[in-house]
Image (cartoon, rainbow, N blue to C red; front, side, top):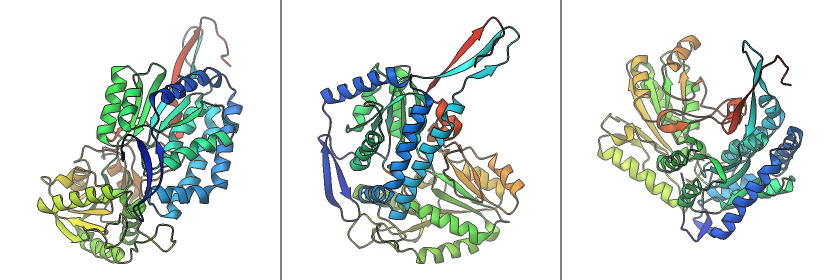
Length: 467
């Protein structure tokens, strides 16, 4: 997902017009070192602050974000192209996550008693230090939030290397923390290229790293973290299965599948990328999908009437079109779309592919754009086999009129999340993360706050109350 535009500057390029709007200089080594030093120094005091102080900061950040949701939403739309209503919803979700950890963090991190036959024992959850967070462009506020909220509440300090095509979103989040009263060094934005982020893992002042992005970027970060024996978490995208069983409500499934796939112009890790339908309802389902496609309206993402936004960049359009062309060359059938839309901006036609066989590259790849890959299967066993025929394992959905049946199928899907009769969703209290090539670790929910704390055992020889 990283979109570097050179090593001397990072730029806002409006994907609706392809015009350069603003640019920032990449940080030189001296400035970068001073920021790491500040984060390290601040940690020594921030880790000692009361939970109430940390919670007050996060609540203030949430309030500022809600008060500025129109401004922030327009900025996200300007930089990476998503529909304005989607951008504003993202800001509101981010504010909810900050509030969630402000409200629940102290409870999650309270000492946890352990049973032992002699004396007493408990776990003390303690922050570990400076964290490096590397984040992508497709959700420029939410991706940062789900990393920042739990870890700052836990007492860590944060260094953020955001994607290079959303520099204004990156900078304004630091500005919001400053406005909220955060001590200098608690939250800092870094304008650096991706390669530099991997190099930073070696710095002894940085204690752990988290990344959401591409498989190559994740491999580089994981390798560096392993070399220096540092904790890491990774979320590396997905090729989620959207299974429609023969007892499903077809209209509801079509609505969810098409809207979900066109959300953010198809640039969502948990988007329903592989639509798998039992054959008895497959033809009906496909005809309804085609009708739904006909109503999609590309245009200005700031216009509330627009239903399909541009992709994030010219390169993004070119890459997705190449994947579609390759899939067709390898035997897939192109039913609709597959080309650029003849207008200014990074637009691609909504695309419908069928006939994708196991020897086709699209069978296992992630296509990060408005491309709907449709599969017809004989039964639920075939659906499960096809759903698992990928190295990815992030999310997935199952539509069925029988919840017990759907849950049974869900248990057999090799993925981190499965939603029944619903798209893979996002709420603060539910964990987000995957397995296999989609990475490891969890964000959000109670699980998200335990990734980067030291669960220290404290044991006494006499019975006592650790609280």
